[in-house]
Length: 323
Image 1 (cartoon, one colour):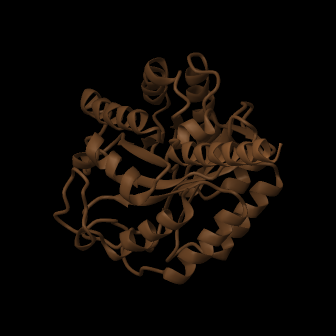
Image 2 (cartoon, helix red, strand yellow; image 1 turned 135 degrees about the vertical axis):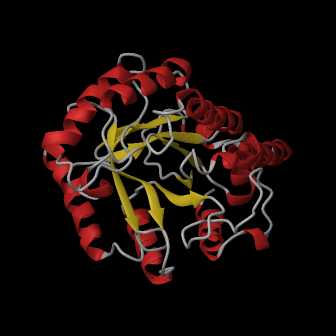
């Protein structure tokens, strides 16, 4: 009997190790599955709270060299991202002028995320409302990819401070979200809020009448500080689920001060409240918020000398925080 107990213990130990190794080898989507909103939080297929951490790509028409499988694979393997964001430009020679080109860029990132088992935010990267065009765009994305739990729809990046919630932004969502839900009834949707997606408290006070909808919160650490965190707290107190689809270490311009202290305060805030977040951005533009140095390859494989000070800070955080 002692021999049998010893054998059982050994077998159980090996099984535990194998199970742990299997769990560690799972992709983020294998681990969490379909996401939904429950109790003002993003939760996974088992109902457990989940925090996604990753990187946003730059405006697609100006940073299109990074919209490829190699860059996405490198972000997974070297930066430990669990989510990527395709910022599909709408104006400024974006989707409205070149719909086939920008749709192809969106699909390239989606296909790469599916292959890597990452979540992918498809972002309508606009300041001005274009609800009819957005409805067509997202209906096409939903029809082709909506069966995959990887897909997250960000339907309006940053409404301006002149776009009131009741007057402009909520009516926009009331056009676009039903177009998605007619095809994809389940996947997570993230709704933009006024004032460059900072007035989350206003949106939370007059919420959208749909399930599985979170609200977009954007910040840049060198400009947005405790006052914006207070607005976020008010929105969450009202029951809203928040998702930081874009944040920067810099000032709101994308340039200027790299504010290490406020960046860490924001990290602590997001982690303590279970808010998923993506840093702006994977680009080699010569500005503070750019994660890469000018001339960095569009195909990934970035060595330390190709990564900017902001990129180094964020990459270290992702490697430490993501499983």
